[in-house]
Amino acid sequence: MKFATFKIENRVTWGVIEGETAIDLGSVLKDRYPDLKSLIASEGFAAAKAEIPSAPSYSVALIEWLPVVPNPDKIFCVGLNYEMHRKETGRTEVAHPTIFARFANSQTGHLSDIVRPKVSTKLDFEGELALVIGKPGRYISRDQALDHVAGYACFNDGSIRDWQAHTHQFTPGKNFPHTGSFGPCLVTPDELPSMDERTLTTRLNGEIVQQASLGQMIFDIPTIIEYCSSFSHLEAGDVIVTGTPGGVGAKRTPPLWMKPGDIVEVEIDGVGLLRNTIADEVQ
Image (tube, rainbow, N blue to C red):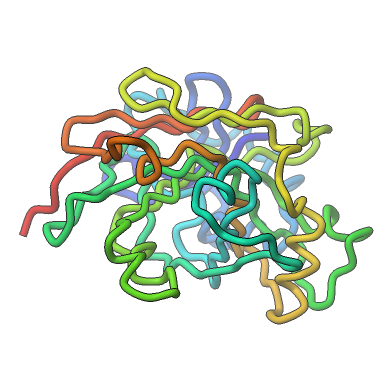
């Protein structure tokens, strides 16, 4: 199944996407599951499926896509998780995943603008796979890790490179409002039996700028979940963004920065295609 959070008729709701149809399950299940995160926390996918025939539906052309989970408790991001990207940054090999955090209000949705802030012109793309935690836990073992995944989505970890480089910490450059695009849908694991062979592609104005198989991650999904759950209790709805391949704009000659009017896409086989336009901040 493919779940999404969206706005329709000035209401924020959630539902299932079937082809070009958005099924508004939030309107019929709002008392039990007011948002997608609460559905995930209650492991209510079966209940949602049962309500599909009675729920109102809309053309996806009429909805405003929102971040898949607009209100996660935590967003953990993995840095330097593909060898080509590690090499292009000049970073040394490490024994453990490099983790930093995003805040929920730095997110934006499919077909919404990624916003270039007025304090910088160094806005970079980072196509990535995101996973959403379904079953909470602490000290989750590698063997049990995939049982804790509710589903997968595309993510563009848009980065303000000069602010990211102010210190050795990534946080400022990764948390400007509306720079982390997340969507369009949460695809449940039963539709994605094998992740390693899937291809992640980032395009800028139609040209491929990043491409790799998910199997090229240095630290795989079970390792990342095991590591993050060791220092933090993972909650249902938490998001883990698993890292970007090489080819980022900052490491090109000359650098390739995203600018207003550009269209950036992140596509992962079977997971979806996430598209955004770049716009300048308006204040």
